[in-house]
Image 1: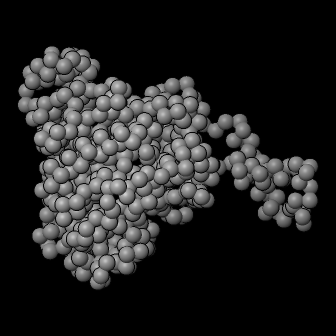
Image 2 (image 1 turned 90 degrees about the vertical axis):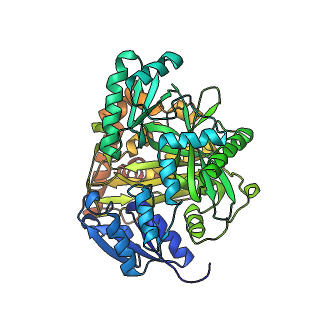
Image 3 (image 1 turned 90 degrees about the horizontal axis):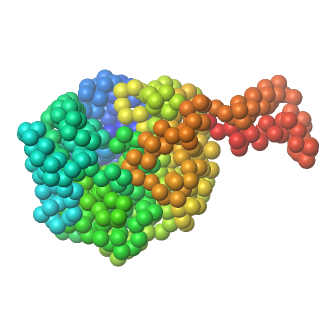
Length: 509
């Protein structure tokens, strides 16, 4: 890459840190933007320059496109990378960036607009020859249309906001009595979250797997798919755990998924890094769901398995460079799993848990990657998405990856806020998860079942005992009463040795 460039990151948290790191390796200067709540956030400290853009609420800072563009122009930034969330899939913001003479690191605004509409994206998929779930290709204007569709296809149905995403504006309908209330609720949520109350309907797959295909296309007509990701571990339609490759996808099925995804990519005129999402039925048939016109949260599992840097490639494509890889070079190696670490309390219905991180110990070692947006002593605000980090592990096969994940989760400690770490520690021991017997409703049912009892009742007796012993060890150390040779009596399994063992190995929080 020739010349010196400067890139503004229109985001915060771990994804802003991830983008800044890629830029640093590429020799690109960076500009961070920040709200009043993020003045000392890691992405602000890491960037070459940082510009304040407003108060803590996102509507007054990270969602103010004009302020972000002004910051880019004032600092001499040439490129704007939106990350994911906030304005990443906002066609109006992409146009604003381009009209200011800046380079948008993402697909063209018209493609964002096209594929951001669930109904228009569905039409593109149909024209491209990709399989789609039976449904209406146009928004529903009259509940009678829903009744006619239900009479033809039966129940259950799924009503979806045309501009929806992240599980918002989606309503399951199991019978005729639920049809009208669900229609009104989906319209209301679509209007509230996306400013668009249009709704369409599809037949609901009862126990599907959520499989997505990573695609990359340049401005010179070349496009490749970089394998698939299994994203079926979800809570209320929000992804929680992702892995690559999917445990049920073999080489032949991977080729069919990739061909369908590339057909949609080419038909939409796509350029940049993107994701084509599919639902897979229990019989192995799959259907186009939607296209995400941005970098995905779960992109690290693909990077680990395929040995690629998707952020770097995204920037290269925005600068007009050709794809770095041929399709035959993209061969999966090993298995990767990602857990999204949220500042939420699973013991209190996953209520948000903002606050100050009093202590932070992140796992490390072979095959372990932590993409984090927080530091010890830092504050997790209530104003934004509660994800604070992503824990990613890689190993030669899925079984070993899960064991490595269990080990890494045992090392991970965050004090001061509640997190979803206990949920993942429970999940890695679940026999169905370990066997890959999962679907999009798996986690919600797990949290309602008997296996979640330990999670609901909080620390068990062993953990409480470990806490007491560890506290005693700490008090002894602070009082200076540790023997000169602390390992002299190791064979006797002394109380302080046992306490230290628990403190370092069995008492992660």
